[in-house]
Amino acid sequence: MRPIRCVARYKVQVRFDDRFLEELKARLRPSDIIGRTVKLKRQGREFVGLSPFTKEKSPSFFVNDDKGFFHDFSSGKHGDVISFLQETERLSFVEAVQRLAGEAGMALPAEDPQAAEREAKKQGLTDWLDLAQKWFAANLRRSPGKAAREYLEKRGLPEDQWERFGLGYAPNDREGLKNALVQRGARPGDLVEAGMLIAPNPENPGGGGQPYDRFRDRLMFPILDARGRIVSFGGRAMNPDDRAKYLNGPESPLFHKGATLYGLPEARRILGAESKSDQAIVVVEGYMDVIACHRAGIPAVAPMGTALTEEQMERLWRVSHEPVLCFDGDAAGRRAAYRAIDRALPQLKSGRSFRFALLEGGRDPDDILRDKGAPALRQAMAATRPFAEVLFGKEAEVEPLDSPERRAGLKGRLRQAASAIQDKDLAEQYRRELFDRFDALFPARPRGMIGNPQASAGGRWRPGPPPKLGQTAEGAQAMHSLSRSIEPVAAALAHGAIDDPERMDDHLEAISAHGFGDPSLDGLAQEMVRLRFSGQDLDSAALRRHLAQSGHDALVREVEKAAAKSGAPFLAANAPLAEARARWSQAFDALTRVAALEDALSSAAGMPGQDEAFRRLKAERDALRRAIKTGEIWEGSAGS
Image (tube, rainbow, N blue to C red; front, side, top):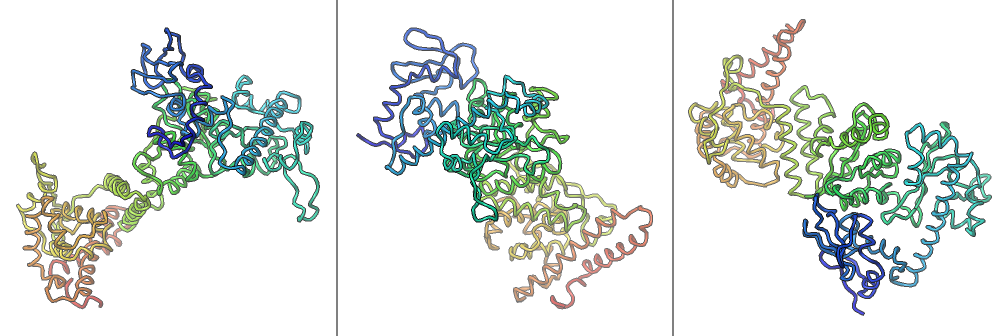
């Protein structure tokens, strides 16, 4: 007997015995298993049907019971019943084998006696949960379940759907379920372990006594694991004064809240149905929302009343590369979406992300299905937004973006959000995407040269010509800049940053927003900022090589010529490094202050009652301009 590892197509690490797998497949006819998903017709010794993997009009999907395989000519897929369940229901190899073993009446191989004992214990608890579900379902149709029936009618869920979703009712009886199951041979201790009863704490005052029913006067929803077994229950209170509107069972040997998704088996069946293979699984907020989606043919699940855990995300990504997270479009829904973003960011990888469906008007999926029907719900779920878009909105809503400082704060938050992604390549792509969105929201406005009042007040900066074939946009802008002189102070700041790139690190957001004070250097400034944000630790020589390769070589030479006329002390060869950095920052802060004053003047111009403020701002701006133009900015010590 030879143990085998999984073959390549299963993509999991698991051990099963050859004999076990062969016996399992020998007990099952592929046409029976596959025929539940594909409508098959006998054709000689084979069965034929339409492909479950592609949309086709002529059948090209074949099943051969004698050989134990299926083959789909339209997609090229081929395999046995195990791989068929993996493909159509998005099960892992282990889950598919477990499902089929249950149907074949085969016990899974036990690793050791203790494991076998634990599995038998779990099976016993599962059996009691199954009986409890039947008892709840019967009570829903009896006289005590009248309020629950009326509630379902009000929610638009017809009676013929109750059995599909296993719905039931727990009467307002302290020992109703307990007595029903004990009469069938259950031990109260097992029912406590399964989460159906509560054992009083003998250490509490007045504690002790006998276990009693956990769920009372509640509409009951069975919670299934990935294999379709009942592992717990959720209950909605019928009494509006009940402290807990929804109540889930506790952690148990069968039920782990952080690893379970309500509705997963049914969602997998929908995903595996014909023509549904391109759908993504949707995450909604409640039991009734999941049921509404399933009725509309939307594969949906819900977490157990908490934010998505990392383990639940992993389960979702095994089903869909980009699951859709659905939230109400109101403030509470956005907050929930933002919490999901924070939890998901470190887990993102290539091929593993989320999209968002934000429903407007405070409506949930159940409301939409009831009021507008299944097509409207499917349309609402299809209107999704990319992860990066919602992430940008999350950071942009932190504070008003009405000043350079606040916009710089947004830039910093975007950079921090991208850095939370552990996949470095993806983090860099997100950094670029978020900054592109920032630039689209706050496009660079035409700026005159520092110290040139005419250009700042009324002059117009005309962009350079479009790049020629084979020339980068940066290179075209750089060549255009050579047709006129560069402002010396701006050139000095750029030259100082090229000589000592670390000078930029405390000013990256401001450089990205304002450049170095001369529009002809904007492309150069943005490229230098991009390199620092990318995490490339380039010294001056490496930075110059990169700028030359990106088409800025000629512009850098012109920067050096113009900077020589500035008299900037931080460019002196004998200037101590710390003092040179401090003086560079002093000059750059003056530049950004001028830009901020320009923004403030634009906002105050023509506003009633703002004349005095306008004059004060204009005087400060003009004084700074003079200091920059005359070189007064260089006077005094760096620390004074």
